[in-house]
Length: 281
Image 1 (cartoon, rainbow, N blue to C red):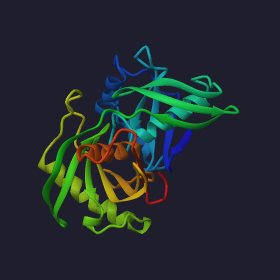
Image 2: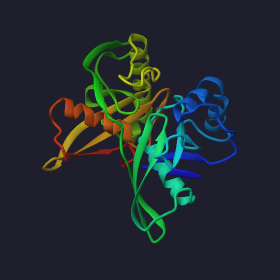
Image 3: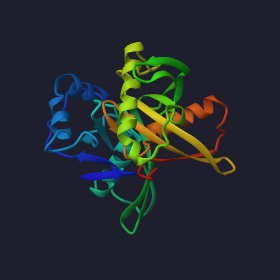
Image 4: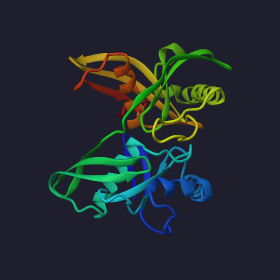
């Protein structure tokens, strides 16, 4: 089933794959990553897919509280969590009847490689009208580091974890307005920054351990006040190598929220609205 969240396309694979080794969804993901990566390459490469899309493989849940598990495949590999992929997977399990629909608000849990994720869906007249998902605990790993990036110069960045490690950079400082005509230039700039950071250092989650090299970068535009405790900002998320996401992404926005909280600019109940190059959230 093909789905999308904010323009980011996720293809949900529901059958046709043998039972994977591993007692948890994370272990099953690691098996694919280490021993069977041909499946990801097949599904994301021509003629069956494109690098800009994602694939979510449904697997049986291994946690008793979850209704289903899912493994995320992207051009960068196997993220252990993704907001847009979670929204798409949740929509698919409802529309396919894996989770029976209930009129009004219903809640259930999915099992990502990172662990349990709380889902809240609203169904109206038998159709999934909206889905929200709980993000993972997010934090700042490093704040306003500076690195000499070949072809760009000194770049100031922070690193947040929000389901994956993100470099957060000021778009204006790098000469960008975050409009669609800049998409290729944004990808080229982000590629250089990510390559430089990966060569400079690695990152490890405080409980999950090694989750791979830093694969994401989030361009942050100026913040525009909309109302008390509510700001809007143009944003763009890059997935290494070479992809600018069609939406601003859930994990990219969560990383930015972690930065705002770290800087003392975010109170409980405050709202950040991010706007992509394609004018989606």
